[in-house]
Length: 209
Length: 413
Image 1 (cartoon, rainbow over the protein chains, first blue to last red):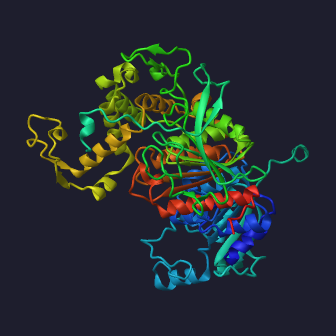
Image 2: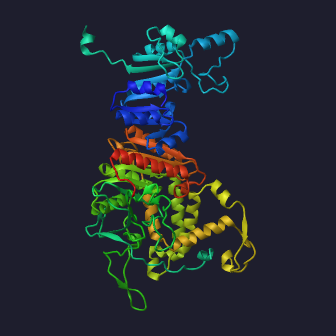
Image 3: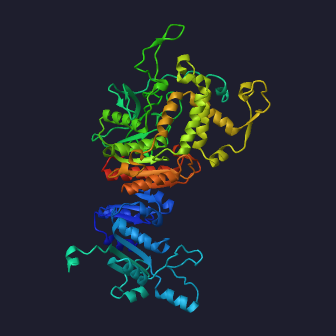
């Protein structure tokens, strides 16, 4: 399992119901079932990965974030996970809404387009940056909605999502130390990892105040 | 040989004594009729565990039967799913107790149109004075897929099993699998509907209707009372089978197997269907024609025409959302069954789009679902054929489900 998946697993309470969108080879859901006693299921777009997962006894359906989340009932899961995929979906805002409709929490990781290397390359060469994380040329990339950590926070604020936890991580998945400053994280973090919740309607006492 | 069916009556099918369970009290059917007595022919493989928790029920398709993993006593051919069921196979009879029964309405030992009609006495019809027992024939009550499942349920209970570890089936067997999960949710730990749909499509009803009309049009059908004269509507049934068989394949599979290859027609003038001009129009035939004729001629030896009518009609009425205003999720709300839905890319009879309707309905019901579309060019019949990805999927899903069920039955040392 990748290191960033370990960080995701640590965010998930044992015994939870989890949906992993883009479950790949199923290593996260397998880990959540075996080590944390979760009812963990997957959605995966690549049929070969789906077949491999099901052949390993993992509950995975063929589908994708844009088209299949709408079919799940409200609050079917405690956590809905989207790993390194938000930038590649057709409608990221809608996908986040669906995640926080069908799940009580959303865990989202994405590559940070605000990283200094990208900024520097665009500035100095005047061409689309090409780095280890952003390695495909502009005409072939599936990453049609890149965003920075600050962009993502702005969207969370627009949508009134509660940021319960967040961290910047490097490409290997090691936790990066720029936790206190969003601006530093946005400059030096290669990947971002967020744990979101819905902003619950204010309780009656609070509204009366 | 393959062309004989277009002219002659085939030999009478071999009568075989099938293993049966008898239910004298009968079965209350969806149509409101009470069918009694009911007999269900079945086969089992493997050993039922002491906890009686390792049973897998296999549901067969339209023209299948209970001989899933052994030589067929009538045709002498291998069991229809021997490559999937047996010791060490994906459905491992060293680990699981496997049950397969002939469907209600079938003709391989279960009560169906070829069974005696108890409400009619025997009568003297033949010149030799032997009494002929009236058979159900077309008076057999209309049955549904759920009626078939009720009959299987009675059998499973009689075998002393409170809960099935898994129900699995392809095509019409998949329909039964879905009805099992909807009708007896507490009894089904895992369900594996394969190459199937939660409803029978207009196109599939249309194909079934052509099959039925071919049988009706055969003068030997005699209004469904062909058994009185000892004949069978072989031409009509063979044409029905030939047409249906095309829908089980794919253009790619037909091209790969036969292409446009031709072969010399048999010398027999009947083969051309035109005794006057044996070598004119049909001097050569395409190999695909020869293949279909063989499919037709071998089918009539083992299948009863009235059973074919009864069972295709049951498939047509399949619509698991019918009692819920077309909502396919409603029958599964609250289910704890683990589902594994499988479709095949080249299946145009039960296309993946219909499996996706099912999967989305199961998602709406918050069910635990796996869904795999297997890449295959073999068409609908792919589930019966050699597809390694399919085998791996079934084996893996069953092992995973067994782990979740807490089954700890290892293979034999």
